[in-house]
Image (cartoon, rainbow, N blue to C red; front, side, top):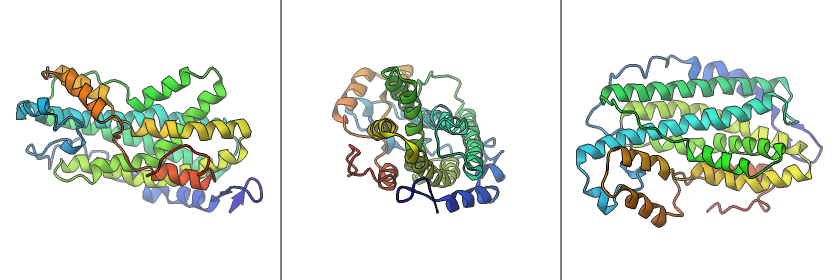
Length: 314
């Protein structure tokens, strides 16, 4: 074990070294999955593309009146929204946070092993985006989807931009990216499990999420150590701001994205779509898409900030 300051937070360099050495055997990108999602073999047209239990308005009385064939199409676009949000998490939040680490923006991550695992993780993330893009393309082909719905940026990314626009100081904006990247990588397993463990949806949809999920368990361990490493070198103002922002990053990651659903319902001219979405936002105001906060809880425990962080983990 290596410590930046005796008696303070311990960085598990043995774990980092093990992650680095095991990458050739562990990472999905090193497997034979490149063409897995270019073929529609094994696709069952009778199965939905997205779990109905994840659609916040599925039981809304006005939506229940919608034709079943149209509902099926909306589930297909639920799958598109899910993939788009996943890709945004990788490309617009996680990858930029890794880039900041590689650019030596933060002290504590300068070791060869740490940099190597971050490089490996970036390759993983690019491959994950590749898998999700191919999965979407395959679904569009099987379902004869000709339309294109302009799905907005994910709510997680929009909230990050909103928070950054409220802060004029560059160091705070960079810390926000880092915090969001850490929260995303330590919590994305819960998001991916929504599909990877869902019953009754397309097997290939569950598979792409499962393959992604496997890699993210390693990434989660890495980001815990990165959080410990950079936090050990933070000054008092950086520590205070980081602790204060982590709950906002968690809420942004867990949030329901009603704007994306609004786009889908509007495209298909669903009657009373504005009312359906407004009712859901009001009735489910405290409901979140992801309800597993164990990633953030682990970060708080490892950084010894459990008493300082303003978050309800129950």
